[in-house]
Image 1 (cartoon, rainbow, N blue to C red):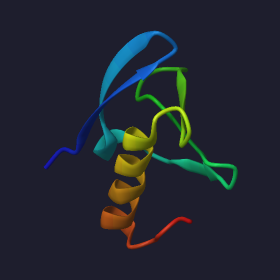
Image 2: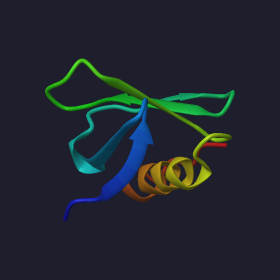
Image 3: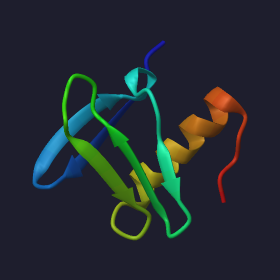
Image 4: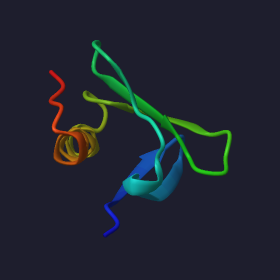
Length: 70
């Protein structure tokens, strides 16, 4: 079952299936980044700028992998 999120990044609105993201990069300063499928676009989600999407991604990672990030 797909896990979709909607976010705005660089003035564009994306609806992303997180199940299709190959890898997430977590940086301890409160950023999560990932690349879109079939694209060179890297999306960076910041905890301060978009807390709801940031938390959705953290929840998804924990649900799928069992790993919790600070």
